[in-house]
Amino acid sequence: METPDASTHGHDLAVTLLSQLEHAISDSPGMFVLGLSGLQGSGKSTLSSALAGLANARGWHAAVLSLDDVYLTRAQRQRLAADVHPLLMTRGVPGTHDLGLLNQVMSELPHASPAHPVALPRFDKGMDDRAPADTWPVLTRPPRLLILEGWCVGVPVEDEVALATPVNALERDEDPDGRWREWVNQNLVHYQPLWRRLDALIVLLAPSWDIVLAWRSEAEQKLRQSGAAHTMDAQAMRRFVQHYERISRLAMLTLPSRADILVPLDESRHVMPGPP
Image (cartoon, helix red, strand yellow):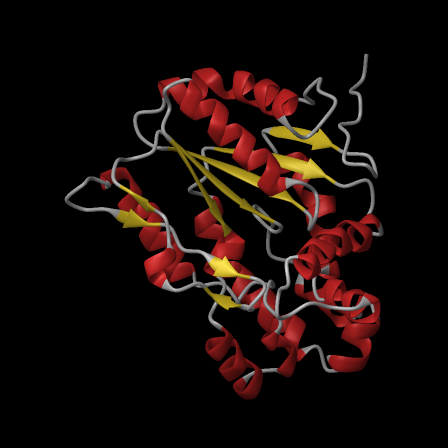
């Protein structure tokens, strides 16, 4: 487990990370699948884009897939909310992603060609629904590097005993019998085979859970400025992030030991210096 010596999330950090993975990617017999995990607002999208750009510049065709782009449709989540638990209307937790779609795309990418193009799913957060399929980007050649990024990438299933105690007001007041969090944890089981498809895992480690509200609020402000149809005020945002607190805390506890490369961040998303 290594800590990169870099100061920012952008180009410099991407250079450092890619240099650490250079031999593994070069020696891989096929598509190298790189997991990138980090809590909401930690800079995963920015870093993924920088890594892909550098890889392409080196001649390694690269593609990025995000868990955010394979959310279930709004209609599918409405059905879950009606049939299982109202909290499942909110996208993000395990069980609200289309794992079948994601695994299908990952399996097809090594065989992408002009005769068999592969479309990469996209989700429109402003509309809170999957983007029309005819707007998805299409690959016509297999990537050497596939970056799979997401806030819960690599997270293991939680011990059922821990589920009994609410971690916040949302769980206490809106899931008093624990039915929602138990359902989410049971669905997290189905993500474990996906994590095993990763050839390496980078973890952006937040300094604390508390910073996530500020980071996620920044992203919401950008959505609001873009004229998105579905945005949240401060009170709604505080409730929103509580959906992810349990698994986020689990990630901060378990992923440092699972990471191939650990990147500890400060509150400004700068990389913390490693030990001398």
